[in-house]
Length: 213
Image (cartoon, rainbow, N blue to C red):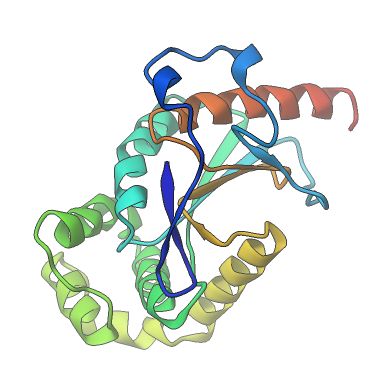
């Protein structure tokens, strides 16, 4: 498994047991420090819902590979789980796409454009990493271009971007994709394994919450 680092967009390799990659994993196989990382300072989240956040960048090929697995997982997740897609804004280029994502979200188009933008970048090889290109692309998807441009640098979008940056720093993320489970665990693994590990960690959190932890 490799992931996109925010430092110079370099690829960093994670050690994987290649010989066992095709074998189905069981809960007993998931090990802290190997399959997921336990945060030293877990976030305190109020309420009885379990929050799962996927940090990504549209230009990241590994995020693109993970996307269909997380989309499928989101359709079958438990009712007590909230899934949030969080565009990482760890550098100026990534922030461009984060601003576009949140502008589309505020206009009610996130669900319609999310997968399409991934495909546009990775299937159609479109360079959608600046405001002008993004604005034209989103307009082609049916969004009001003037409204999009107004929201792009708006206080509302800037606030969402700031929260994304703050979250990435809190979770000590250095690259994407990364899935954070209830502010306690970070999962960065092979795409097909991520949903399984997330489900395992969701169960752990659910038991902890019931126990008052």
